[in-house]
Image (cartoon, rainbow, N blue to C red; front, side, top):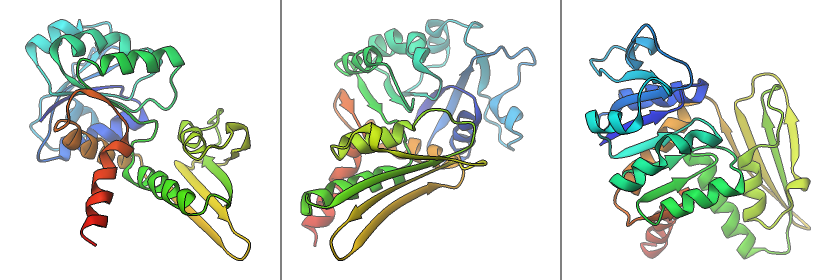
Length: 254
């Protein structure tokens, strides 16, 4: 499976590291905001011992059409920002390249753009693409169906410099029919990310929690998403869509 990565910040670097160590994916190229005058490969930049030659390009250094002509990919993975879609959406549509977007928050017009792109190829958008957080959301949905009368609180914790409420917490709130204004946010130190969903019952409390210890967790989620997305028909998917068949299979098998 050939992949291209857009975004090479802290999380993008961690994802690139996971992809470079994966035995069933080949990282073909990386696009970041700034130029790469040293012409280093991703492996050289990250000091990983591999012969993978994937180069890093600044987004103004090469046209996406030319890059894909020279180094085609099966999946484009986006860890950049709101405007990353402008780099690749048209080429992905025309070539039928699958897209995995892990942008935490999009303006509504960008979500519409993704959904439209899903009419032509396979598109997955997950504000938090770690397997653990998506399993937590799935488990919370099931518990809410079992006990809709329970009180629900959502708590999210992140590093001190993160200004906004996390996109993941907003997705959790929307999934559980809660207002984003009810989310409790904690900012301290270098917390990568922690989310907790508290279910309050009259005589018991259930706490579902997930903590990202390192950003490589996002890379593991990307691998799961890519492996499962490519077997799907074209459309617009969430991580929940990819996880639910495993739950149904487990229930069916007892």
